[in-house]
Image (tube, rainbow, N blue to C red; front, top):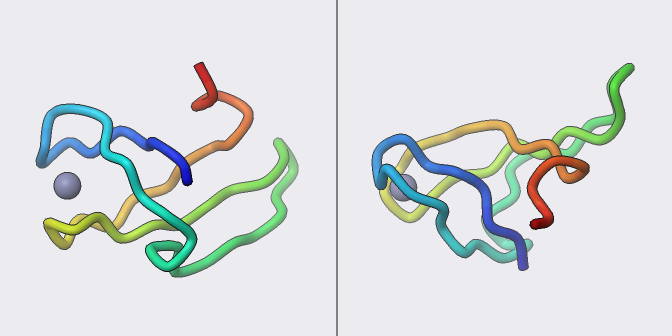
Length: 51
Ligand SMILES: [Zn+2]
């Protein structure tokens, strides 16, 4: 599970691996593309969203 920020919810949302649409490695590290339950698709950086 992970908790990215969703601008539609205006808060962080709890998502699980089924909500990941893409996972790619970029220069800065790993980048997760997720789809929120509200339909919002965003990017989440695992190294910055753990707190
Ligand atoms: Zn949302």
